[in-house]
Image: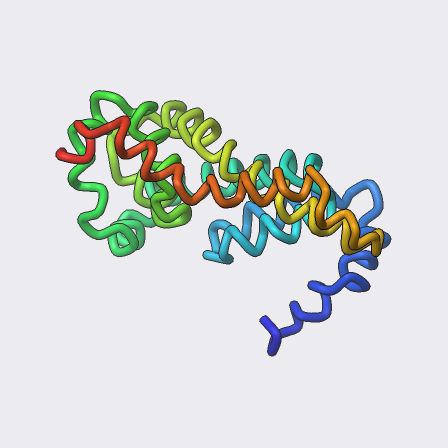
Length: 203
């Protein structure tokens, strides 16, 4: 990204200009960019981090979640209708071991795969190849990405507020320690979920 035109926008000045130009449309523009970015394999961490920096911890979380859900839905429909060979090449056999469970328990299986951080974009396209009902996929995804999305946006948004204010003493505040704690805990969520679902792990 340092050697592309994007580097001019991913700075304090660039982001500020983006907000000034977009005005009240900024959230909608960002949501659209996020949704398209998901389908174009732009790393979700970059898109999420940008949202947290621009809109802060809380509104950033809302806009990131909406953009991710729209992008995930579009990718699912592409995988199911237009790009079955492409989707198959992304996931290979990684979803095959979940076939039976997906057919019987679509919502629970999608939720489980989201909580264990199965790669976001491949799963979006790959689920279109399965027999999962769209609404099971939609609600399983929506609930499954809530925790990780909130933790990441809260962490980045909190650091952004301190950087913008220049009050570096806030680095030792409860809010920062809380956000760092959440961020660290997020790495243990997959292991915790795996222990709660030993049956699916042996499938």
